[in-house]
Image 1 (tube, chains in turn green, cyan):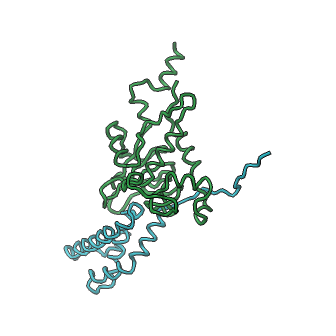
Image 2: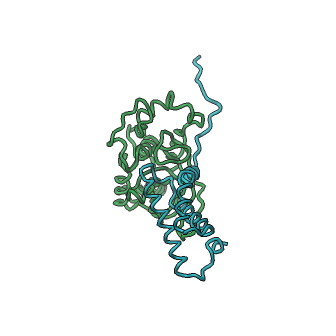
Image 3: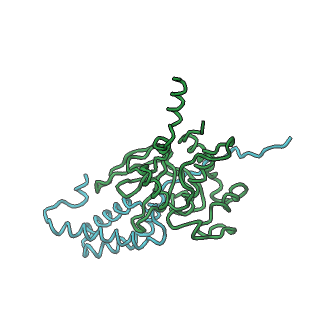
Length: 209
Length: 103
């Protein structure tokens, strides 16, 4: 039996990668420095970082790469030495959105825990950030009538003020608005629409037999 | 026995995009007030109303989804919002002041 897709694994793995609050002043050290070399290539903020357009595209920085890292390793099966993470390995939010749209898992509904959000930039007319919705979701209404949702997200490539680009991984209180163009990737649905039977159905059928 | 170093004081890094909004307000405040005064053509109350309209619009735009390159877009967007609000007032002279409409 293959490992099921699990938002719980996904979120707990992501939480393990959140930076220490004291690291903000200290700068990347130890394990953080190793991660920084691997993922924190934007901004030219770290001395050993080599910014490259391919690794840190304008549509995502290293936020999408962070999401893939978390997803891949949270769904890695050591018995088969493979991961069942269904989303493509990309650091481009545009690619991620295109994949999600083609698999009918790109949603404009209210966010749910475990979703991957894509933040839309009305200026650049593209998705500029990807992150993970943790929860504590509250609906908001703007004076213009636009609806939004305040929620806790887990972001890479950010700062304590939730900036678009930055050297940290943090739990951020953020406003997501489908009306403003933000979208959500309901990746656990990929298991249900794949050609294989979902693990829960397969297990029930085995029990019935 | 090897001792594994742990940091008992670990606190996860928390962020809030409201700080990005506050920073944007600080950044734009001065020139936005000047622009509001110009658009209001010397009417101090209207200038204050227009400033509030622009700040409300900035909040809705959510500065956390913009980077430094997008400052011109935010500025243009706020000024257009003020001009539209001013035009709206011009069209209907019996309309209540902005502050009263949101009570």
